[in-house]
Length: 463
Image (tube, rainbow, N blue to C red; front, side, top):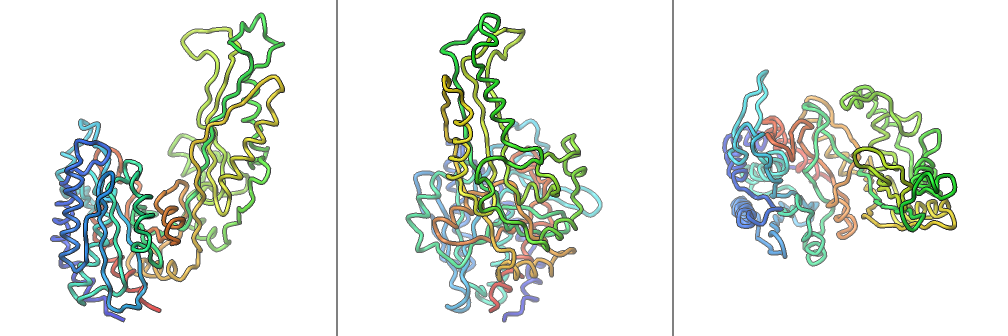
């Protein structure tokens, strides 16, 4: 077991230099979605390769059909040490609208917010350059003090996360053997609050469907045909209204197959966070939860499946009034999945439900809009337990294990293509304004994030 005290001291002593390295990376305008910045994306990849090689990694650029990947390996102190794959992305979102920025987006700086709080400003400071550099700087300090890392580390930095990661799956398929590890570390998430670190153990999956109900062969005059002709908006409205019962549960056959109850101790830890329906919904002008009765808002958004209507189209929607019975009506419906719910089974159950409610002289079409299973990690896995303890040693408040209502595709790809679970540990904050003007990253998040990874690297090395 290596002594991490001098490593943590090195992190503190090197903070100014660590910040300057982050500033150098942020100055690179690596906007992946805009072809005009192709050279800048490659410049960012090249910068990372040089930096990683400088601290003992075997790092290289790997070309793809799009922007390049960065892959790096460090053997660790012993050949039988645990092996992790660390993932991050060096590309960033466009800066538009530029007029809403207080400072130049690619001129990073420290800004004092008062009350001892300083933030790093600039595009990519939080998403994801600042986050990935917390890990790189932790590795730098470890190698500086002990000459090697306590575990084997492979790093994968991609340059297309903000533009849909089109090259990622082909790259994982082609390089699976090289990239496989015991588990992955993903640093693209947030803390619970400024003093409470978090590990995300669950991500909801997704099924997207668009349905089009057709009745008559043309739009009809509602006076001549009203009361006799089928109205597809009526039909569609009834179908959508029937997706939930009076308790808020989804009515589809087999919908809850594979949905498990959240462990009591995890629900208790969520309750202790103090997030109420009023505080959560009050931010958007609401106060009454609409999902399953008897569940907390965190359970509803992190651990329960949903059926949501995302859009309805039908009839005349222009200015004024038109008395028409539309020939067609459509809706976009999404399902967030948890546990072991099967996206294909959910899709077929939904389609069977819709078909059963279509009159014999009407028809329905379905258009698929993606599907992916939920990610559920063990709440008491050894790696998660070690990382949680390490984070709790660093921060003012103990680490919490949380769920996430959305999806992080890379985590599913690692699980499906490489057979690896992921530890999702990030140091972003909800007010970091990622994807928006005036993105920032708290200096404390950066500094203590580096220290946190030092502790986690040490903890994961323990048998």
